[in-house]
Length: 217
Image 1: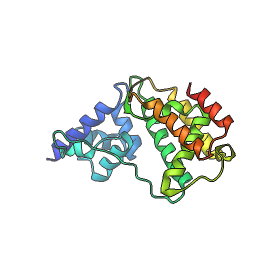
Image 2 (image 1 turned 180 degrees about the vertical axis):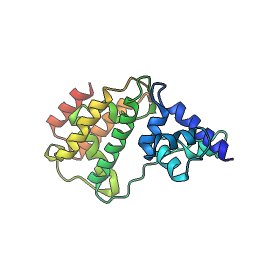
Image 3 (image 1 turned 30 degrees about the vertical axis):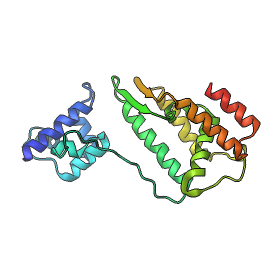
Image 4 (image 1 turned 120 degrees about the vertical axis):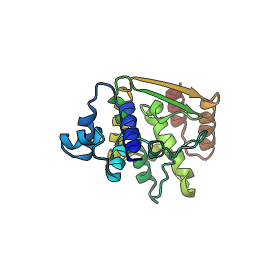
């Protein structure tokens, strides 16, 4: 059983890393052990500890279920990224850092490919457009925990820290080698309906609507 788990872990790591990346060096960086200790693990002489496996799985985005063979045919593993902070802005920063972590991982693989299917415009695509970013954030805050906006969107400004994270995401997006997306047929219509709805709440001024239309086009 130990040999099987070790072999499955090594196989998963090799499949996840680009061919030109040295597996031993990567493991040394992740779990901070010497080269000889790494090679003993790769040869199967010493098994990886659970703590080491956890660090590797977290860093490389590996599924422990798949490694130990606990997956059921036809099942799907989902990560919900639940947010628990009462501060919406703090939650938003957590989400931005999740995007940055994922994009940083992808950019290290010259042959990496991103696939996504979505019924809303992905943040990756509208991140360079400041007014759309602000609108989607204000809409999210409005819906989160019953929080209601009582002032126009043009009066809201992002803290410098958030602006910096937006810039990092935009720069990282440009490093993605390839991306393929499947979009719902109403992906733009849904955003237009949101803009109409919040215009009715006096959250958007005429200048806001014009800017959103220009950026969306």
